[in-house]
Amino acid sequence: MMIKENLTEINDTLPEHVTLVAVSKTKPIADIQAAYNAGQRIFGENKVQEMVTKYNELPKDIQWHMIGHLQRNKVKYMAHFVDLIHGVDSFKTLKEIDKQAKKHKRVINCLLQAHIAQENTKFGFSFNEMNEIIESDELKDLHNIKIVGLMGMATFTDNEDQIREEFTSLLNYFNSKKSYQSENFDLKTLSMGMSGDYQLAINCGSNMVRIGSSIFGVRNYFS
Image (cartoon, rainbow, N blue to C red; front, side, top):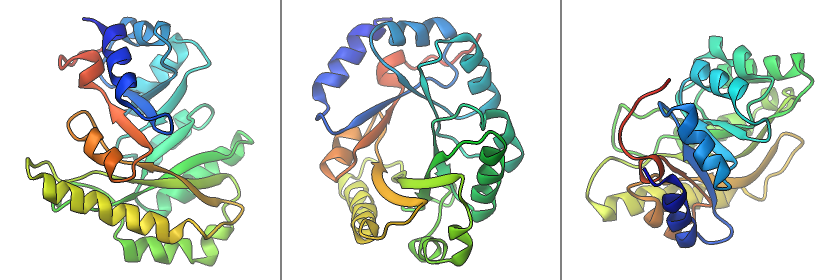
């Protein structure tokens, strides 16, 4: 497995303003260490306990991103170290992140997840639901979180026009909210795109992509 070579090849295709999150879910410590040795510092996990285990065993300058659906009762296990939570899809979860971050005297960066796909299996807010949160007085009371961007996942389809339309809808919403800023709301990050569609996502305005199989290969295992 040529992790270093894969990373170099991918980084050569990314514009300077685009951040690469190496999706290391189910991958063993040795593979993550190989990517770290090749210069990668940002890794994404979708299970809290797996991320905690890896955090304990790997270098402490790694930035850990929680990219999977997050259960509220799991927030406490990662609140002391998680760098960015991608998939915040309920206000109750946002409140729990704030509560746990306060215990550790931290401010945890978060992305609100938008439901842009034509699939009911995807999580996320509608744009109207996001508006309600962004404009609410309750949000202003959360001093230990900061909403720094938005995340969305396109429909799993070969129809590039549909994917482009879904990504563009999130870009347009993102741009419409960038002028609104507060203590805990300042949109900088638009996280769209994975191994199969990241180039299209970048063309549609993404500045953060989540890539796993193109770096580590498709075999899933963890030890």
